[in-house]
Amino acid sequence: MRAHSLTERALHSEPRNPWAVHSRAHIAYETGEPEGARDLIQAFLAAAPRESALWGHLAWHHALAELHAGNYEAAWARFEADVGPEAHPGMARNKVHDAVQFLWRWELAGHPHDPDRWRKLDALARVVLPKATISFHEIHVSLAGAIAGSDAAVAERLLQMDEMEQAARYPAGGVAQAIARGLARYARGDRAGAITVLAPLLPELERVGAASRAQLDMIEFTVLRACAELGRHDELHNLLARRRKGPGPVPVAGVH
Image (cartoon, rainbow, N blue to C red):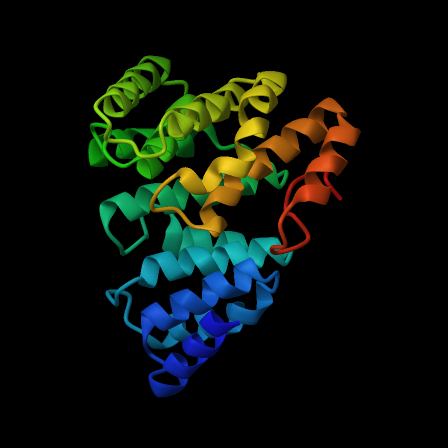
């Protein structure tokens, strides 16, 4: 893989390059070897100052790698220390989507729900990103709001997203809004409705701009968890069979 060889060359030239470490984290995720970058990221975080570029986001990558490896205590410890919005040293918008990403995946893996944490995250998201801008951010703001029960705020955000699409400012068309609505259905307990909305969108997730496979998998994992909870095993197995190679096993309760 050319990306792998180029990244390894960059790391050999400058092991402290956060962008090369970040690229290596994504390559490891895409090729199904989250442990391949886990030690590299951990070593970088231990050596680099917290104010370094990408430090907080790389901490998210590390927490994710530990989650995929089944090292739940290590994953949660990294989240609490470096990824949660109170601890994340990165840009405010990164605090939002990194925290939403990890917390949601943590719960999809079967861990307890923390309503107070979600209420605080929802409040932060609406302060940091008060109006619809980039569709990737809006999916996370809407999800946090739906989980926290801020239905009016979610409805207003979706209306803003629709207006952005009508103004031709969303290249993904209505995909981002559909994802937000599908995730909101799951968050409100409508598992079947979430599957109906989200499952047909899985082949189109890359249309959401400014998002990586490591981030977009959150949506597929939501569908997998909904299928498992409803006992729709045939559908679950079909989705897993069509799943593109990536980190395994999938950290979703009821899937294994």
